[in-house]
Image 1 (cartoon, one colour):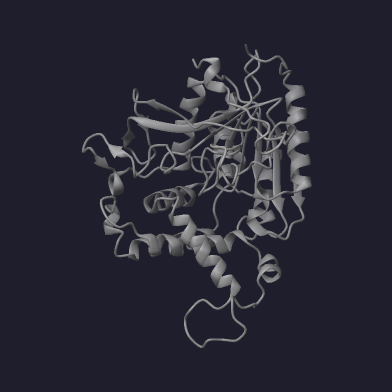
Image 2 (image 1 turned 90 degrees about the vertical axis):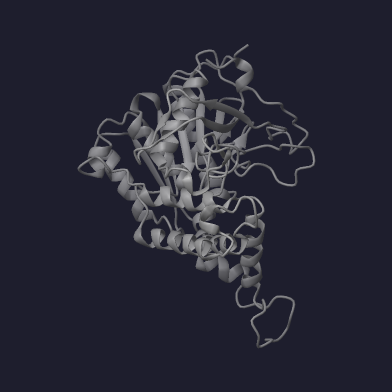
Length: 399
């Protein structure tokens, strides 16, 4: 069982304002026995999970909220690692004192998925059998495998039942899998900008990104850790993926056909349009913080995900679910459109599951859930408060 120190953070309200969690640290926890059994038929051991916590568990240990990150995210969901950090965690607008995920009320946990490159075991980790990075020898992992690994972490932290599991995009897939896989361990689910399975179009975009990486001569069949990494291929993959996170309206307003640092066409292949410059910036900045092999593994896990796998239908998949649901979609999200959210809602309601659904107007495409949005913030805060009351969570803090 975890000690109380495992579930507290260093707070500095002056850093980021009074509603910030302040300075935080990333923790790691490693397990080896029993090994993690993977859906591909292989096992993984040892397994390290990087995670961060905000707020504290109450005496009843029933106020824990587990947040999942999207494809390129990590465990650093809120606050700052150092006083000189330029940016806070990836969902800082939603996590902190008095925010939607109120750290005065809830113990918020976020963990990096296995297969990732931000502290959890992935292809860049050292293979204990060889003493070298796994590279392509790392086993294929699924969303279900990621959930099974994080369930081990929650057990380690001494939490029997989560007040909520929450996430957007791939993070929403993990939240859905938690509710289906461990129905007795989850009181509520917040599924945001996500679906029960990725569409053919989504799989197609992921494959283009993977092919860009594998076509880079520096990929070296995934064994590039002693030399140059496939930066160009990964940058292209990010550029392609980033297009799917935006909307046509947003791109028109933000860029239109405006030129970058010039007034006329150059009639060459240098960067000319603002949107070209923006995408190249996204690609260049991404390769500084992400591993190409992790991009391959995580996108493949997203492609494989289908909540109905092992069941006759999506409705049957929800048969044993006991959690209450909040499902949010955004009007301009064409990667995970509202119709896919409604499919989740209907499957849950067909099983008598209490479900709240909201389609939120936004011009910002799939990335809408990562941007300030009063309707999303109010929906999440209200839903969590209601579930918290219904579950009789104690407001007393742990010593």
